Length: 241
Image (cartoon, rainbow, N blue to C red):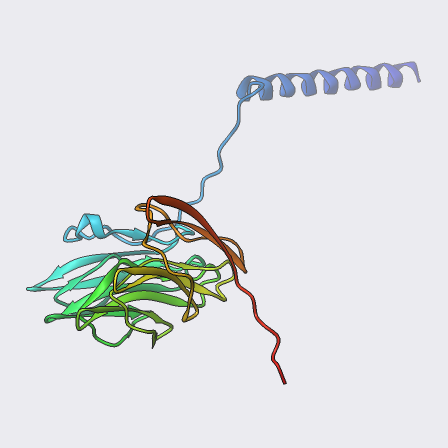
């Protein structure tokens, strides 16, 4: 019996010693404060040597890419390795916030058009400086277009009213409203869903239309020598029956 107890004790001591040695080895491999990186790679395709570098665009989730490549005397947009239609020129491609949609402006002859998810819009004389924008939830698309010396906003394919100029195109949070600054006969005002606001001599250079909530926004305007912070609330009146 004593022999069995002795053997058991020796076995326990040996096992404990082995455990201590293993722990020492682990601590030597991973020192306190150090970490290990587990890396996973996702191929987005091969780099095209003919790619025009400044046209390279990456989706917000970094899983999709688009760029412009020359094709003879034309150019085409390559999206996720798939070549699109040929055009004479292009403007910057933009992915939607959810990374599922893509839009860009393209030139054909002396006309410009916007391509959204591969579908061409109506031709015009030029595209606004802001380019194409998606609403925050990625469902709506808007851009400024030039036609016959006037500018207008195109929203989901529908054309708005023509003005002498437009600027500061913006969606409200949630994408329900679209707003922009417009000018007619040297008088500037904000347009929200086609409704014109109060007139000013102009908006400050570099200022933007900023939505503070889905129904409120502000911007900076000027009237004579006075600089104004303009705060507006979008109100839906009750129907008078």
